[in-house]
Image 1 (cartoon, helix red, strand yellow):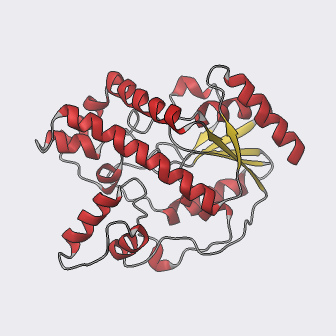
Image 2 (image 1 turned 30 degrees about the vertical axis):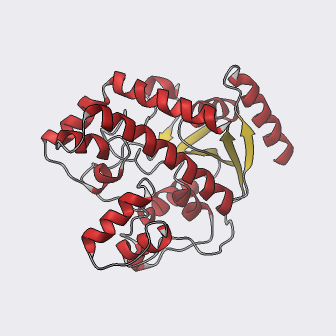
Length: 285
């Protein structure tokens, strides 16, 4: 059995994945584009070792931040794991929908697409400014996200019409938008208390300016702070704002690209959500 747990940041995907992995004796495969990188821990909300509860986790901490890891690379690695552990239950967990679809759907990336970037964590304004840096005369509207990404890559990373090639159950976690945004804001505050500034400062002082650090929310904003472009309070507010906007884009992407069963999370008693999901899985297996 293959399960895919998706949804926006801060909604409880990691916790659900652990509980389901224990119930079904499953392994867990990361499906977050930034959690593949070593030392990007706090800002990506990466699962801590003690939280894994002995469950095998794959595709976490597999690349240095200076390396370029693409959707093509992820597709190869994830499909290799699917074949290697085809006799086990497998749970994908994360919010990078393009990575998940490239793995589980009948889409073969072309050679020229191996090094493309979907820029999913950048806002439209940031994409627009990047495009202007590339060509000051470009005339794409800043709200035309697809064209901006295509322009930056010279090739589109959109996945065309395709069909699932693996029999997977797609579980989405959601909640009231105001509650989600409050959780995201609180989560950013917690990251800062845990040492996010020091985590990012270590990269900055080593003059590391990789693609991962320049696109990851929480890192790119603090780089601006260290560069003196914005104040620390402005950086904090920007991290929260970009995280909320990213969550909104995640919802839009998953709703348009995949057939997902959505569950409203009971944050007061998460066990209720776990039981609801388990009941659904038992009915569709």
